[in-house]
Length: 342
Image 1: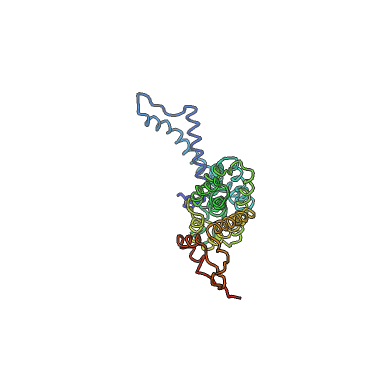
Image 2: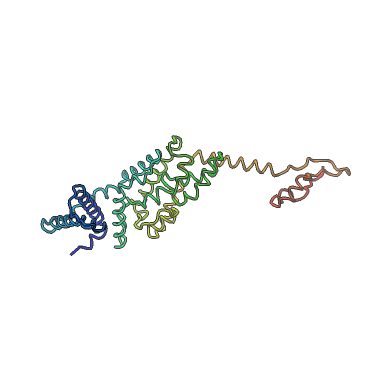
């Protein structure tokens, strides 16, 4: 009887091993041309079916002999071999190494997540165990899942570039502002190639330090929040193109503390801009003051009235026209203001 536990998280890596063993066996038989060969113009689909018959029977017989005759539990053995890797991935050093590798690969133009596909089986196994624990009413045991990196580290894409897209909108360079406008919407949905290759971040020594340090700070904060039980680790697989706040909320099964953790990491990421944010704010303030001085006309100088009365301030003719043309400047002049005579 097949144990049902083998169909869950415990059977994930044995399934990988079985698939690799079957493929390599078929390849070995095909390379040596071992198999049943048909002649006489049989259809190609029938020829391939008979050619795969012998290696298929060989795989079944070998596995049956090892498990039922020798009494070796292959599934439990493979799971025991991989278990230290899953638990080792939950350490702070492991999650930091993953972030550093991803950022370093992107800086040279290589898709980091594609290279990190080698650890995806570990992510899937940890997520499956989190699902099983949550279904049993227990806290999810693992932090090392792909959802952890997507929703709490790579917000806006690898390198945490969502804040970078927002800052580009207020850049002094017109070209960078255009890049920010083109990349802000994709960044909300975790797609940052327009920013990485448009700014560019790739092969850019000036942007390399924040591109590496920002996700490193976030992964440390998020790992601490989950390891110390402040926030529940993710246990639901959510499509990665959702906005980060929504994805973080759904991946935890609706944990409201996810919003707080998501906000705190975003706040720390924004503050990491430091002088750049201050310079941007100062530039915007100067620009706004310049626009205001261009639109508001000064009052006419004080003049003496012919009848000898006290002088008064009267808006010039340009200010009158500007006030009537733009109702938003209605408060710029609310009528003549008289001063008391001496």
